[in-house]
Amino acid sequence: MRNRWVLVTCLAVALCAAGASSAGPLQKKAGQEPAPYFILPTWDGQVIKSTSLKGQVVLMAFFQTWCPDCQRTNPLLEKLYRKYRDRGFVVLGISHDRGKAKDVEPYIKKYGLTYPILLGDFSIAMNYLKVSPQRPNFSIPYLVLVDRKGNIVGRFVEGRNEETHDIRKLEARITPLL
Image (cartoon, rainbow, N blue to C red; front, side):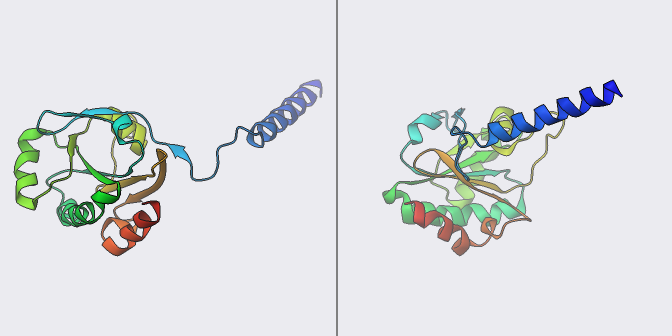
């Protein structure tokens, strides 16, 4: 009987503590997830740091060159990039090809991509896509939209969100942020 009383007391304290911590003034606003810091090489040997993108609307497009859906999506992203880059919009392609620059260079030329293409690693996938050693896979294309304040405001995954293949729906998400 005494063990049951201790268990009930512990549960009550835990529930009260959880309720108090979730209602406190430090609770972040809905939809405001700060974009994690990154530093990655581009396919042509440059380096891009996330801090250099502050104040811009950024669409991160995780892809692989062999992916048919990515081959359809990336040229559409190029159109958006050209249309809105003068208004502070940046597309970052993040390749997860094993061949790195060797695979990416012909792909860039084939599709006429002018936005920066980064060579992704496990850390960016872990931080932005929530992969882990236990769950290392993710669907592509996977798009992450970051606002001018550096907050993730949208995640669009092939097979779950139309924004990955419907350029008008994606554009409707981007333009209010510009």
